[in-house]
Structures are given as structure tokens and as C-alpha cells.
Image (cartoon, rainbow, N blue to C red):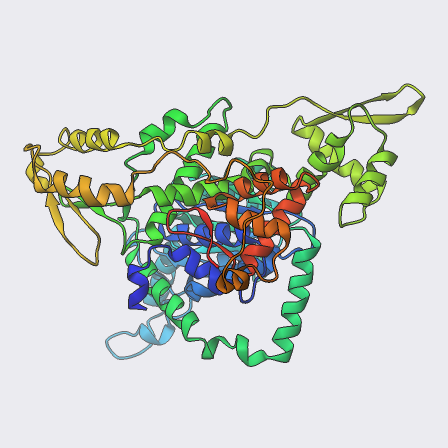
Length: 586
């Protein structure tokens, strides 16, 4: 477990271990993991898993959460307000702030006697009156701090209304009252919800989560036959060799779980993350819509979660004896690569299979089209067969978000035609990627200088990390040990990036020559395209890989290029390096 404290890319370590029981779904697993970790931060996040049933939403969540403390996880079904209170509420005395036990703390007759030891009815009645008055003023406290709430089903509408301000982080304490029927009588219950939990919704119900579309991330598990085949083969392996999947015998799992116990035990609301490049990032972050303000906050939260996961590896700033953990550029790259996977589903608030229907089916028609033609095209190129009635629902969701509209069929006024509306392309990921790097050595120097405006230089210092604990004082002398060391080592390693340029050859049509036996072994079993990709693709993003693959083989569709990438990742041929780039590793 101690070795994990010095591992540069812990997220990749957890995901590689998780690959044993969860095939593909690379982005979904990462989002569930970081969302769960956010429960222990100052800014817990919400995640909405949308998509058809039986696509692995709940399975992804339950497998990822095995690494986290069980006592912090609430697996919830169709939760009503009374169930929330009775199952998780604690009765609190409003005056003392201490817990009340409704049974043990109730006055007992035998405890009230006079000087002769006889029952004192008047004293007992007075105590009982004070007890009832105490109960009347008491309230039920539901402590949500450091909790991971998993909604397996859509919560009761009234429960959702009570939780909405909590999910929006409107206030740290929300108070409300409702009527409860107990022992045949109605009584008013005062409830206080304390703190903000991390919430994960595993529901196919799109209506009740529509209002929450801007309050978190929306993602859909992979929907392709290769994933389904891999899942079936995994199930076969688990039945044939169950001992290989026994967590009690898995030392690696115990180490990862132990690290998470130590990490979450150390994390608290006092752990603050500083992102030195956040201001420069805000300058290049596209913001034209009202929801961009919330989306930027969520994006920064992903950077913070990656930083907190590496709490033992990250530098930290001490300013007036307060510690601030410093997010580095790898944390930004982790968030950026995830953004590519959830940008459209989050900003549109619709499941990934409907986004795929829009791009691959509807946009393939140049003008208005009938539902019959859409159904025929969909069932021709997509894995799942759907009816025309199902497509009506898809189109209605797309109309609600302004991606499509309908018009009267001039040949038959009883019919409606569907056509795609002109809309801006997904711009966040591409815009941010093209603007990387945006934080340079002079920017870091300016940030350091700015610290002196908030405290005297003698009270400011930076430590390498919790392992090395090499401290460098910030002082006004430009040749200080901090600046000379940090520029030469820490800054270069943690923040400085060369401009992004995928390493590709100018002439992709020529295959690499294979000379030695070692080279022949390396390329054995690879297709001609994969051999060429190995030579031309040195590092980059999943999108860069797919674009290059389509350039090398124009017959490839975007989906096929993505499937090739996922297959190579599953096979361990491609992996993400500590700087956040995908590379060939064997």
C-alpha cells in the first residue's frame, strides 16, 4: 500500500484493476470513481447515468464503489421522505444539540418516587410533559456529509423536491417539515438535511432528472456489441474460474482499498485545492450560455478530484499555516480527456444512444425525412433494433433541446417529417485541446508573486509532497532557493507542457519496415492498419488516434476507429501515460 503513495497515476492503477471485472466503459468507470471521491471534498458532484436498461449502469457503480468505505455508501431505491428520515435520521434535542433516544430517554414511572419510596404521580406527569415538549421541539438530523448516495431507482417526487437544494449546494443545512402517520396518528416532523453528498443516479427515467441537467455530469455506458461480447466472456470466466475473482484472495484489491481508507480518512472539508492555472484556463474556456458558469465549476471539480486522489504525491502550498494542495497539469489533462466523453450528453442532458442516433442516423439525411426511413436506417447501421414508435420518443427529446424539428409532409398532411437543425458543433473539448498549453513559466512566476499580496513572504512556503517534505520558502529575493529549484525541477515536472503536436509521419501510406526478429514479434498478430498506426501514432488523445486511423484507412467510420482504439486499450497495447497522453506500451 505504501508504494501507492508515490505512484504518479493512481487513477490508471485503479482502472487497470477494475478492468478485471468491468470491460470497456473507460470513461464511465472514471467518472463514477471521481464522483464517489468527491464526497470527501468541499465540492461533491452529481453524476447521471442515462441509457437503455441492461447496459451496465448499476454494475459499473457497484464495482467501482467496492474500493470505498462501505459505511459511507447509501444504496437507495424509490426513496420516500419518511423512509429517508426513519432509515437515516437521528433525533436531536434542539436545545442541547445532543441525540435523543425515543425509548431509553423517555421518563419511566419507577424512576419517580416520594421520600417514602412510593410512586410520585405528579412528578412523573411533570417529567412526561417536559419530555413531550422536548420531543415537540426536537428535529431529525440526516447527516449527508461524506456520503455517497446511489439512486438505483427514481426517488419519490417529494423526496426529489427536498433533495434538490442539496444537490444544487444552495445551503449546508436545509430544514423542512412534513406530516407523518405514526401509530395511527398524524404528526409533524421537523427534518434537517446537513451537508452535501456525492450523488449517482442509475435510472433510465429521463423526465425526473431533466431539472438536474445542469447540476452535474451526464454519461452513458458504452453501447456496442464488442462490449456485450466481452461482458459475456467475462461472465463465463467468472463461472469457470471463480477463485480468480475472489476479492478476499486479491492482494492488489486489498492494497487499493487500504489506500482509499487512508486517503478518505485524511480528506475533510479542511482540505483545500488550489489550481494555479485556473485563471488562465478561464480565459480559454468557451462561455456563451448560462449553463457554462456551472459547467466550468464542474470541470474544475474534476481537476480537484484528480488532485485529491494524489494527495500524497502533489505539492502543497502553506499560506499563513493553511495548506492548499496544488493541482498540476496532469490533473487538467485527466479532466480534459473525460470531457471528450461526456460533453454532449452532459450539455444536452440526453442519453448517449440518442446522441448517436442524431449523429449517425438523422444527420446522414440532407433534408426532412420520414420516420419510416429513420427506422430503416437506424436498424441497418446500429446494433439495437428499434421501432418507429421508439424513434418518436427520441425525436421529442431532440426537439426539446433544439437539435431537430418537424414539419408537415407535403405529400401526406397526416405525417410529420423530421429534419436536423443547424447547431454549433461541440466546442469545449476541441477548443481547450487546441489552446493547450496555456500556462507557462511566466504565468507561474506571476502566480507566485501574487501570493505576496495576501501574506508576508516569510509565512509562504511550498512543499514537494507529503513523501519528500522538502520545503521552500517564498521570499522577495529573486534568487531564492524556492524559485531556482522550482523552476528547474518542480515546475517543469508539474506544470510545463510543450505545445500539443501528435507525432505523425508526413507520408502515412508507406508501411514500416520490419527487420529484426524482435520487431517481427512485436508486430505479430497486428493488422496492416495497426502496424502503420504503431509507427505513426506516438502519443495523443483517443480523438487523435481515431482521426489518424481514418486518414490511414478512409473506409473506417468514426465508430469503427473508436472500437479499434478500445480494443487495443483492452488488450493492453495502448495505455495512458502519467502526463495524460495515450501511448503504445507494447
